[in-house]
Length: 313
Ligand code: NDP
Image (cartoon, rainbow, N blue to C red; front, side):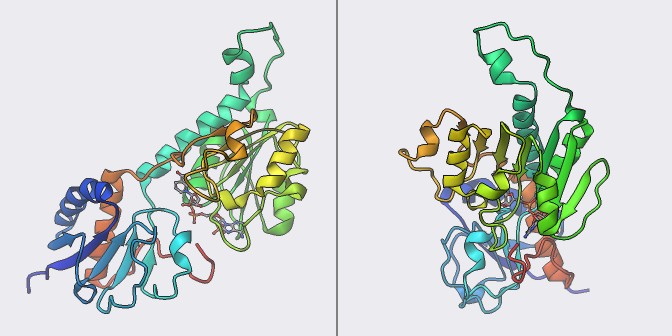
């Protein structure tokens, strides 16, 4: 049997990301038996695999004539999907560590509102002893039941929330009610008290939370958006918060990042902002995902986590 060839991997990312990931991916490739050279710069025609952050560092993919795949180290690939020169198989990151982190972030923010953390614990005035309702009586809508949304929905269901999930295709997940399609969105959102957005941005999901859909929620409901900024109509969100029909919004993602210092979200008393940190890719677990896809490419096996150009995610 001949020795496996040494593959040339272009790792296109900001320097600090490169420094962090390089040793981890080398170690992961070694453990799956793929000899490799990883470099931040290579002549395009010499590249076997492109590992990259899809943030425009590579603008033209047409010179990568022998590359077998482009492997994103980010979960979201919306920024690169419209690039007509990227015709290679494109895999996105599905990282078990990132999934775990997202479940922690979402659960923490749901519980903040569920137990009335701001009202009962962080506020030192008054003596309001109204008991918060039990989770089983609180409807939570999870928009997106994929790798991240599905895991969050399952955790919330394990905590007894009345979970209603929404996806594009019909899905069945234990312990919750699943909806799909336009009518399903209405059913998922109607009277929900907490909404979590974990959808990709596509032409079908942009502004999925707008004046009309926000009006379906229980008065005083909370929106938590670690998905993508474009999922929400910003003006409709502010209008609903100011009118009091919406109680609070916790936003981790924005149409333009970093969020402008003067953006009205920053000073709004009913908005909590975090700087797109809901869940970052974890180096150790994600390096193994990249290495496994390169191993698959070398073995002629199908790549994991391929993005559908047609569906846009
Ligand atoms: P997946 O691709 O695994 O899941 C996407 C989900 O959205 C699926 O359930 C899919 O439905 C559903 N969906 C897509 N289009 C529609 C539609 N038109 N109508 C209804 N449902 C739809 O994505 P992930 O779970 O991995 O990621 C979700 C989001 O989280 C992404 O936007 C990603 O960028 C973001 N993210 C944010 C991070 C942060 O730190 N803030 C970190 C990582 C990711 P179906 O099941 O039928 O395919």
